[in-house]
Length: 442
Picture 1 (cartoon, rainbow, N blue to C red):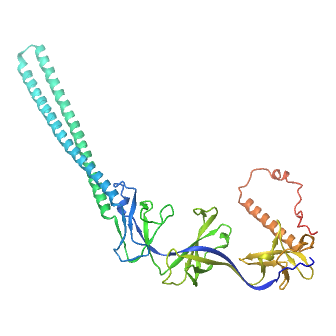
Picture 2 (picture 1 turned 120 degrees about the vertical axis):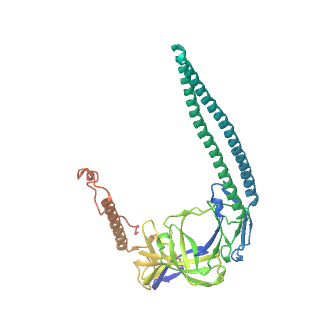
Picture 3 (picture 1 turned 90 degrees about the vertical axis):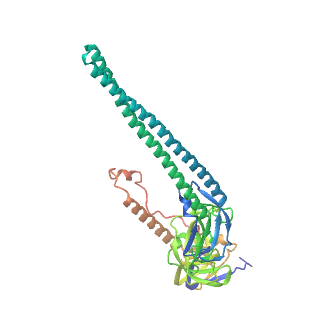
């Protein structure tokens, strides 16, 4: 210790603010979205995705009906030509079906006519055999019966073939109807490939399913239909992501100071309005983060979507507490302590509370004005350790919290049919409340 010099600080008392810092991106709270033509969703078209071939420059202010983007006309022209060819083939098949039907039904009608003539002839033969022998009359009767059965079979066959022909023509007509409808839908899509603004506003391009901003050559589809948006710049939000370590500190309603990197001198008041319940992995990231939405109060004509924001979220405010620099707090596996220089240099166990980027609240172990070292002295391991009662108090409360949690978990479990006492045999003889060993006091 002889000749050592250490930076000293005092324990302070006053208001304390705990904050979480994050980087975000400005977005409009409300926007009108520009998407692919609704015709692309038609299953008749059989086009599942299409490329963007032209775009107005991002940030352009457009009027209602103004040009925004153009989609690939050549791809739809190919699909249209294919559909028109299919329609021509179906029309030819319909015509062939009608001709075949007419020919077949004409032949069947001729057969029916011949069958009816044969029946009449057999009737006449039977009538003329009235004076013939019984054998001749029986033969004439049998031939009439066969002619009548043949006519009945011809009539049934005619009805069956007629239904089959009608069904064949109906199927061909349905195929033609569907192909005509497909051609019409494709033509409507072709006419809608020039994307127009539904209302006046500033064009901001959206992101595709891979997280890349829409540009010439990007692919859009009915599953990822968004091309651009026209934001309402009168109400802005900052979309940010908080790591899983700090997310438990964030809640809806917390106040935020929002800075915009493009305008370092401007600060905006804001408030947390949404905290995601489920974390996610960002592209090229290796830690889980949670989406948080911050609403900015007021408006500024210079604010634009996609500007980078620096967000300071106030997660806790304490009116009158003791606090010390984080640099003065030292840790072991089981406790926190400081090097107190008055009246004698000691290691003082402390309990801390809320923290911000520079300071920590002291809940136990120190008093206002007490002098601390910011670095460990060379004889740190030889210094006496004070505040074992604080250490024991922290352990006691931790054990009580653990037991409370165990009781709550046990209360939520279904009742067991196991006889009382059996579950306790293995643990009987264990002593509760055994004192744990604090850091060596030397």
